[in-house]
Image (cartoon, rainbow, N blue to C red; front, side, top):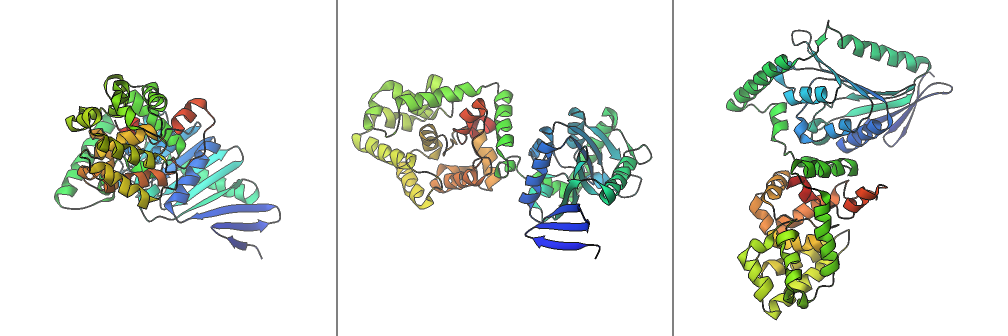
Length: 421
């Protein structure tokens, strides 16, 4: 028999002849597709892409995978119906990729091909996913990964595919986008989107634009998350040491278990409230109510704060959510909201909890969770956020080897503030 199929989970081995083994993965979940794609970006030297359309790079994923790709990239992209986001074309130009746009007056360009090569090794993704956040994460998609060393008949197959990709990348079928052309296309893209919204037509590009730009947080691995932290720090002209200084001060001056004596020391109150040089992660003492509670609260109030903080600081993953909720509600019952208490949790357990003190943090994360910003005032909204964080690949990643990365990894939940500040 010429072909022999052996099914083992999602892996299919196709035997053509003795010593000629091809391994294929049927990727019928978005997580498996994205994970394999990210792996290939780390392992291969060249990448050829041919897709019908590309989404907005502002969504972070899957573009961060390509940003981390150290090899050469060749892209042929379609622009039928003005679907491809103009910033995607500019993004590829900015990273010095060899990008060409398939002529819109030619046949409808509809492939979804990603071919990685490293000498004789290759990895071919082919299926239904365009280079969009939806195609990698939110849509119902199915793709196949074929990976092996090209030899014999396989070498002929890959050579044939590469010939087709090369043909699409010639002046007969595509062109190199200029700045002038891109400016004109951007206007057409916007005009098309306006008309579609006016008519109530929800096209794939519009659906893509409606996805929160913070949605990547659910799916990012540690490498992507770390680079987002660095980008956030650079964008806002900050540095990671500022965060470390505050968290180091908290570890040194207000270690757990807390005692009510902390509130009788002005320096400790400054650290807790984010006053002056301790303002990183939120100047929550700007709230007169909380500032008064810190300095002039009764021993009864201080005891309630201390007991709740110590209980919450003592939890470890997987977090027992039923235990988290009553302690949060106990803090909220004192008056201040989770915009305040989140910072206190963040400085005592930066590996578990994040602050939601900054408006921009609440804005971005409310879109991701699909909840109003006001929900972060209460326990339920904060718990939703912590659940998202604790289920994310970057949060559950292994400890990195790099010393600088380790310092942030140990405080990875707290450094969310650096991204969305």
